[in-house]
Image (cartoon, rainbow, N blue to C red; front, side, top):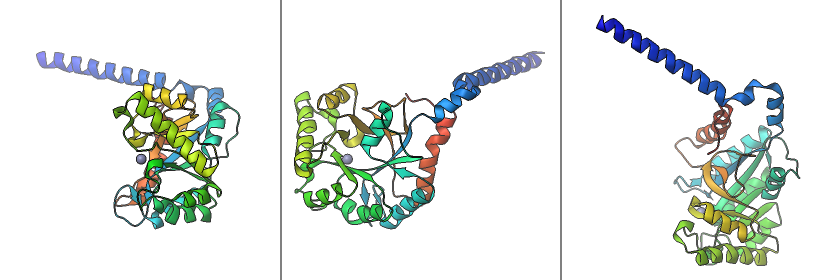
Length: 274
Ligand SMILES: [Zn+2]
């Protein structure tokens, strides 16, 4: 009898669990229940932002092989993706610019020389735009960083040059005064060197908080990019935009496909941004 009683309790628990799970499922996806809401969602901005660091023949995770980078760009081209600039992304989020189908923002952090030697010719081959976030204090200091001449050449050929601070220090370790210097000096230096406005920022090491984001805005940036995994849409914070980091792995191409298709699949299940 005791056994039977336990079984009944278990059955009740399972039924309750199933009911709660069903309720959560439907509560979490009200947008799918309503046809006109679905249409509305299709008009929303949804942008994939890829984040690279190095493109060369080193066998480290931060460095995608040139042949792998080429294969990834070829995939994007053949599958109807269109590259955009940070200004186009910003305009779309402000409702002032219409994006092409399957928009993708290709970004590089730090400003390694290999971006010029390997990535840039491949981007040109596919007629792709991209964005490089420079740590301005590394320029002219280290041999494996781009030079201002290379930056100017790329800036006049579809590559947007933006800021990644001066010293690449983790921003949560800095005083307000230091933060302001990192934000302002890098912006002014790059603008002076390339003769174009610098209005976007990528957080060095990805570290940021609301206070840091506020200072980024105060320094005159329109938006900032994190390394939080996800696609950008209307729910995104302008000063904490999501990106999809792309790494060199055992099977780089499969990892690339998984990463770019995983986010939309997740969002389809009504995953919400935190
Ligand atoms: Zn960096």
